[in-house]
Length: 421
Image 1 (cartoon, rainbow, N blue to C red):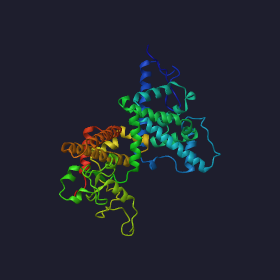
Image 2: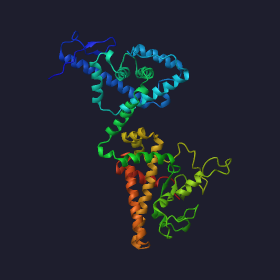
Image 3: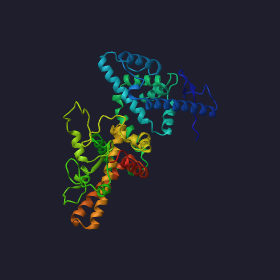
Image 4: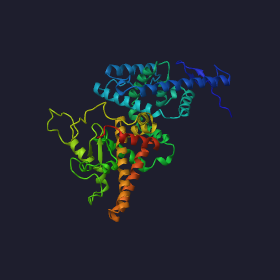
C-alpha cells in the first residue's frame, strides 16, 4: 500500500498536509514533501554548526534583560507559538537566571542531537508536516523554530528558539528528555553493546577523577628501567630527593606495587631530570620559600620553571591530538564526565605514563626471576598484582577507543619527548 501525503501551503511558506486543493499528482506531492524536509535538515545542520563552531561566550544569545524581553516578543511573532506565556512579573535577577538555564538546555539538546541518524530527523519533520500547527507538541514547535527559514539566518533562529525555551520553561519540563537523549547518543555511538559494561563505565569516571587530581603528568613521564640499569653513575639509580633506589627488588624492599608505581622514576620534559614521581608531587605541593625570586614551581634540581607555562607544555603527537579533538568517542566521554580537552590530554598522558611503568615492572619481574635474586613467593604476588594493573590499564584505554597502533606509537613518542640528560 502506497502512502499518500496531501499538501497545502501555510502562511509561513511551509507545507501543511491537510487538503487536496493545491496538488493532485502523487509524485509532485512527494517531491514537495521531500524538498521541505531537505530544507529542514539543512537549516538544522546550520544551527548545529553554529553551536559547535563558536565558543561558549560567543553564542548569539542573551546578555541583558532587555535582550531577553526582546527575544521573547520576537518569538511570539515569528515562532508561530501564540500560546507562549510571557511572564513579566519575575525580577531581573530571576529572569537572567532562568535565561541562563534555558540557554544551557538549548545548547545541550542541540549538541546531543548532533549524532542522531538522518532518518530520525526525517521522521520528526515528516510528522510535523503531517500535523496541523495547532496540535504540535512543544518540541515540534522548537524544531519548527530552529529550521524555519522565514525567521532568518541560523543566529536569528537560535535567538528565537532560546526565547521559546525560556518562556516555555523547557529546561524544567524536559530535563529528563535531555538526559535520555544524551545517554541514547552515547549508547548509539558504541559499535557493540558489549562495550557498555560496568567496568568501562566505572573506568570513565575514574579517569575523570584521576585527570582532575593530576599534578605533574602534563610535563613528566615514566622512563624505561633499562636506562636506569645502564647508568654508570650510582647516584642516577636513586631519587635525588629521598635517595631511595629506583630499581625494585634490589634492596629486599617490601614495597607494594602501588608504592612502586606511586614513586616510579619520571623525567621532567623541560629539563630532562629524573625524579621519583611521589617526591616530585610532594615538591609541587611544597610552598615556595622565596616567592620574590621564584614565583612559580621549579625543578628541584636545576630550578627550571615547571609551572605557569601556558602554551609551552609538551604535546602528544599531532596524530593523537587530532584524534582527541575529533573522535566521537572522546567527545562522548567529555560530554558524560564534564572533562575539558586539556583534562582529556592529561588523562591520556597519565595513562600512558602509568602503562609504561607497569610494563617496565613486568619486564623487571622477568629479569629477577631469571637470575633468581628474589624469593618465589614475592615474585608470584608481584606478578598477580601487575596482572591486575594491566587489566585496569586496558579498561582505561578502552574508554578512549583509540586504536592500539596509534596509542602505542604515541606512548613511545611521549616517553621519548622532551629534553634528556
